[in-house]
Image (cartoon, rainbow, N blue to C red):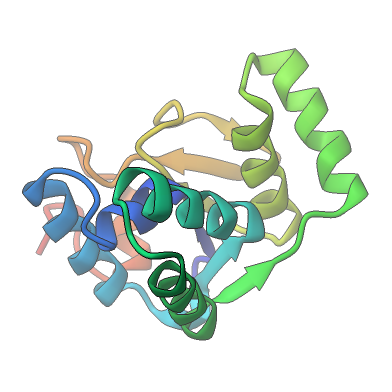
Amino acid sequence: MIRLALDTNILAYAEGVGDAERCAGAIKLVEDLPAEAVLLPAQTIGELFRILVSKAKREKGLAREAIMSWADSFEVADSSWSSFQSAIDLAIDHGLRIWDALIMAVAAENRCRLLLSEDLQNGFTWRGLTVVNPFAAESSRWLDTALNRSSDGK
């Protein structure tokens, strides 16, 4: 089983924040992923709360309910001092924004092979973790394997 992490944009789309095509795609993706293989860096939960309240204009209590539902459905991984140190290195060495780097560092520390994200460079690999854009025109063999489908999407 391939362990993978979800970036905030996947969660936001699945919550209905974004265009209809991406929202539907994110919902299907999350439904198709084996729950035991999915990790949510705590940073993504915090960012999702901010997006739901500020961008989607959701009432804070409803945003909390959505956050708790995600946390009940998937493992949430905390950020450690070690992950912050790695994130700082990623930010310096590869030009990532610190909060994106932290998500990547937490995913790598928790032995994820994939980070599903539309915001980071598709195919970027660091410490065995590869960023995969699930909305990219060309499918990823790693994502296809995680979803137990052939590389032609079937």
